[in-house]
Structures are given as structure tokens and as C-alpha cells.
Image (cartoon, rainbow, N blue to C red):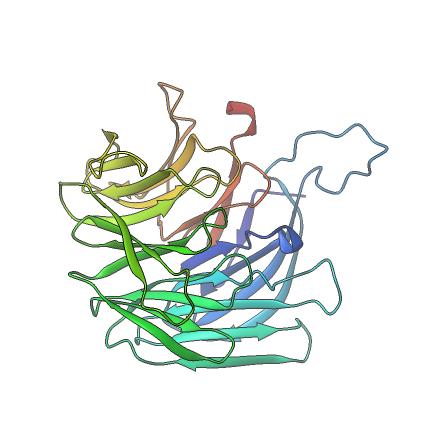
Length: 329
């Protein structure tokens, strides 16, 4: 009996699919004071090339726990591009942002060898971490301490400290512009920094502002780097970063407050939001009047898109729910 749910041993506080083609089946999530790494296979994903291929569905046909690592207080997860399940030796490398102000870099071969490094410097809880997406030699983190820190993830040292005006909410790289870092602040300011020169201080390139309420989440479209989106107050807000610093489009989406915004990795016009009341999940398409999906969840604490399939995983109280939107596109 297959399902589109994975049951967990507790509340899921953070969740992230590996976004790299060498390890698309890997899913990491935090639950019950542990980091869990598992491999997830969906219906029709394993068809041979001789068979008539059918669209991959969100029904889970195989789910294997690969690693369980004791660590509580995880707020965010980022995969390194050095993670691979296609080539030997297999490797999973992740960064974890923690409530206790620390950043953990975890490396595992999914068998006996697991190492971790602790990066210290933040003075308050870490809200977001992100590996540079081509080689993973740099790692960025933002915190409630009004700083963004850029680390050398190989030598495990600090490279730069960016002073922010408000708490840092999200930090993002984009593989189409790998020398640029996006930093989103609680105030609604989103800044882009150039990191072209290894030893030079990051230079501010451009600035976006929502002009309304507190920003609770922001994301940089992985397919089209001109597009930036955010959850602000009760709305979602979109920018074309090549034009004005002011938003290009905004709409009401969660009357009790928006708390999450994530771009699809397959379609630049598709994104999800989460918000209140009732921890609702909404999947939007910019070309459609109606929502692709509107689900009411008992608990909502994060969501992530699959790297190559139109499937998102949504964290819940004691489960992870998968939704696919392939039939709606």
C-alpha cells in the first residue's frame, strides 16, 4: 500500500529536498530532536527507457531512512552541491541553522563515517543558511542578531560579516548568478551583494523593498533570477529585479498572515505560500486566476520543492505530506 505521506516521530521543524541532479531523491528534515536524511522515490520515477513513461506522481513507492543525527533546535537546512547518490563514494553534506545561534556543517557517507563542524559567531538564533550552489565552498547565514555571515565552508572560517538594519530572515544564492547573494530582512528590505572577489568585502548591487509590513519569507527564483518573491503581512509580493526597487505585483493570500514563500524549481510562474488561519498551503500560478492547490493543514512548519518533479513536500505535526501539481500546469 503506497501513500503520499511519510510519517515522522514528531513535529517537523525544517525540511529540504536536495536541489542537485546528483541527489534528487534525498530529503532532509528535523523532527523530535534529530536530523533525518532519507531517500524518497515516487510513482513512475523508476520506469525504464523502454517503457512508455508516465508522469511522476506524488505517491511514494519507496522510502528509505539513510541517516539519523542527534541535533535539536534546527531552524533551516541547506544542501551542498557536493552531495551525490549517483557516484561513489556516496556523500551527503548539509548546513544546519540552529536556534542556539550556531551553524553546523554535517558530512556523511550514509554508513559509518559522519563528521560535523560547528561555526560560531552569531549572537542570536539563525533563521536561514545557504550553500553557494556551484561548488559549495561558501556558506551564508542570517540571524536575529542583524548580521549576515559568509563562511569558508572548506576551511571552516569566517570570510565576511554584513551588518543589517534588521533581523535577517532569508539568504539565497542562484546558480545562474553564483557570485551574487540575496539577503532579506524583517523590515522588507531585500539586498543583493556581489562576491566576485574572494578577499574583497561584498559590494551591494541592488535593493528591493516591499513598502508594507514585516517580511516573513523571501525566495529567489532558481529558473529566472529576475524574479524575486516574498511573504509580507497578509500578502505575497513579487519583483522584477531588473526594474524598479518597488514591487511589480502583490496580492492578498492569507488573511491571518503569510509565513512562507517558495518558488517552484520547474516552472518560473509557480510558487507556494503558507499562512494563517489554519496553516493553509496555497500553490499559485501567475497565469491562472484560480489557485492550483489550497490545502488546510493541522500544523505547518515549512515546505520544499523537488528538484526535477512538480512535487512539493510540506511539513506537519507527525508527517510529511507530498502534493504534485503536474496535472494542473
